[in-house]
Amino acid sequence: MRSLALPALMLAAGLLAAGCGTAPHGAPRASAYPRLSSEQSSDIAIHALGLVGTPYRYGGNTPDGGFDCSGLIGYVYGSRAGVAPPRTVALLSGFGEPVDEDELRTGDLVVFGGSRPTHAGIYVGGGRFVHAPSTGGTVRLDHLQSRYWAQQHASFRRP
Image (cartoon, rainbow, N blue to C red):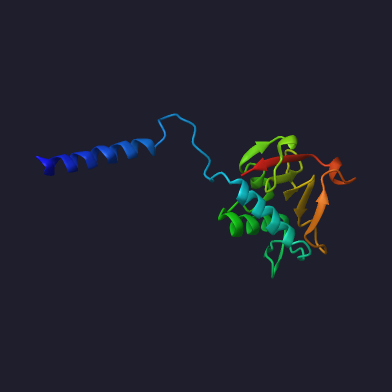
């Protein structure tokens, strides 16, 4: 009798686990990306700050080869959180969940350009963000309220 109870118990446990792992039909699908912990978000910001001064390079995605804005984001998120964000700014504008500016935390994304996103960076706290701005430049730290950036439409995303 005991030998039959164990397989039945294992089958019941397996069915229960399978039921918990699937969404009911018609339920909203969870994000394809895991939510980042506060520690990962801080680590992302610290790593981004450490890349300030790296040369800009269109299509670049490594410290040795240089970065463009989405390459910088992909490199930092990949190396510090094991997350591979979309490679274009247009796709980054839908990455993660929207966040209000007054709820920003380190590691969040700053996406500029409204309905036609043109640029992105990583929020590092204190109203500042790290980004790879343009050809001939380097990765740098800027303030959201600086003369130029305060005039740009910004949205914020939390992976």
